[in-house]
Image (cartoon, rainbow, N blue to C red; front, top):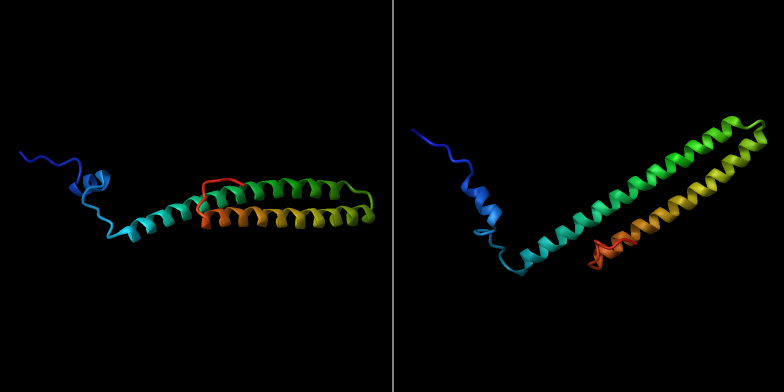
Length: 113
């Protein structure tokens, strides 16, 4: 009777880390850079998802205010306030994303700011 091996030899090698040799410190450096890049990317994605959620909520509030307005003057004032707030929010978000990227380049991708 033939038995089927449950695990491949290659997967055991990969799990144990034996048999995988990085050629030099350059290989380790590449692994470190890749890890930092993934950490910074994940942090940027979390930040952007939170930002988009916050902006959609604010935009919905503004839309409701505009629909409830009685005059075009009120609508124009609401729209003006919305534009200023939106530009301020996007500017602040770009600053946060730049901080994340800068920390990543400087070796602190995991730190929040």
